[in-house]
Length: 304
Image (tube, rainbow, N blue to C red; front, side, top):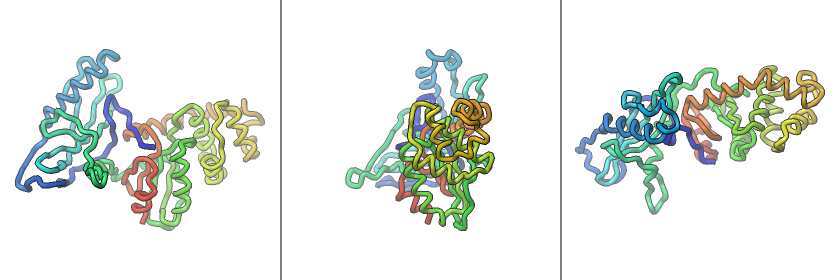
């Protein structure tokens, strides 16, 4: 599943710092092309007004001073120079939070490009610079719940929805690579109300340190998707009857218990992921390097 990042109108992620030039093709190394940052900020502000001004009056006067360009990586190909950029939108009050954008634009800051591929290989010229933009040197210490500590050298964080098929493939893959990991953390990112309930059940197991790996395995390998929340909880209580001691003897009581104790926690966890620009699943971080979607080849390469 390709990860799609929510923003006002762009695809997005996060990162920091400045990286050297990526050269593709035959542009002269003597050429110096600079990004017109002011034009870019103006273009983004105008686009924001057009996209959101009619829906929300707060955006009708959205100005370039609420746009911040945090990072830019030049991309040369042939005689052209584009820029991969990380941009932050400072949303109007009362939000005052930041929305992070990842874009590839022309040097004038007026045109956006979604991709340019080598026709013979299918390789995207944007892949490497965008991968650098995605790198996060230090994730928040409380981002996700530690599932295990191992003897490997890699720190892995996975942002996941329990019923996303690619998340399930990713879980199976990571189990096989456990010896290469120093730690594995799981961030719950439910995409619907049933997934949210399942994440509450996982949060309960994590909070009480009750068969965390066994229950996580059950969720990602055996739990069947059913629209009825009570039927979901009955699957848990059939597989793990001990849960009734804390949840109650029936699904109604269990539902009330989980929602009262863990709904806010699960929603905050999702919001924390969204603050990093994440909106869909799965997303993997291997030593800070972000991988969108389940890509066994790339994950295997990073875990070596």
